[in-house]
Image: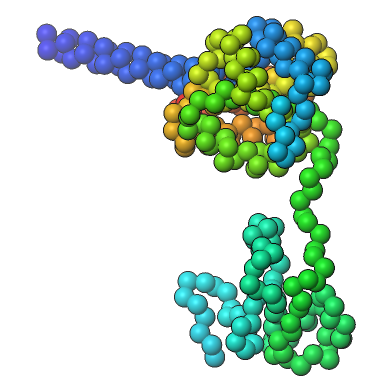
Length: 68
Length: 236
C-alpha cells in the first residue's frame, strides 16, 4: 500500500515539474514574442501609414536636432 | 631601477621632467572630451629615453636623431588635428528604415532610449532613422490602440521585403520597449535588438532569423531559454 502511494506521488510530482517547465518556457516565449513583434499583414495598415508619412515628406530622416 | 606599479604588468613609463604628459593615441571619446576652453594650452610629449624612435609630429621638423634623449617637446594646442575616425555619412545602402514612436510616457524605457539614442544612431548610420514627434506618435497610437503602453517602439521596416511584396506579408519587426519595467531590462533588450540588426543586415531570410534569433521559437529556442542563452531579464 505504501509502495503504491509512493509511486503515485512520484508520478504526480514529476508531472507537476514538467507542467511547470512547459508553463515557464511558454511564458518566456510569450514575453519575447510581445517584445520582438514580427510585422505581417495584420500590421500592414500601421506600416502603410509610416511609409506614407515618409513618401509625403512629412517625416524626414533624423539629423541632429530635427524632429518631425 | 624604478618601481613598476602594483597590479599592472606594464613597464614603468619613462619620466622626462615635471609636467611631462603622455601623448599617446587617445580614443575618440577622450578627444571629444577635450574642450576649447581647457586651461591646458600646451601639450607636451617626452622623447622616450629608451631606444624607441621618437615620432615626428606637428610642426616639429627636426630629424628624430637630432633630439637629445629625455628632452621635453612642446606642441602647440593649435596643431593640426588628426582626422576623425568616425564618419557621419552613411557608408552603405540602407537595408532598414527605423521609426521611433514615442508618445511620451514617463517610463524607464523612455529614459534608457534617450540616454542611448546617439549610440544607436551611430551603430545604424547606414539606415535612416525617423523620429516621430509626440503629437504624431499619439495620433498613430490613437488609431492603433493595441500599441498603447508599448511605446517607445522601434518599428523596423525591411526594405528588401517591402520591395518584393509590399506590406502584405512579413516586412519587419517592432521592438516594444515600453513593456519592460526596469532600466536593466530595457537596456538589455535595446542592446540585443541593435546587435541583431547589425548582424543580420545581409540576411536572406530575415523573418526566420528573427524567429530563431530573437523570439527563440521552436524546440531549439526552448532549450536555449532553459540554458539561459537568452538574458533572463528579457524573458529568457
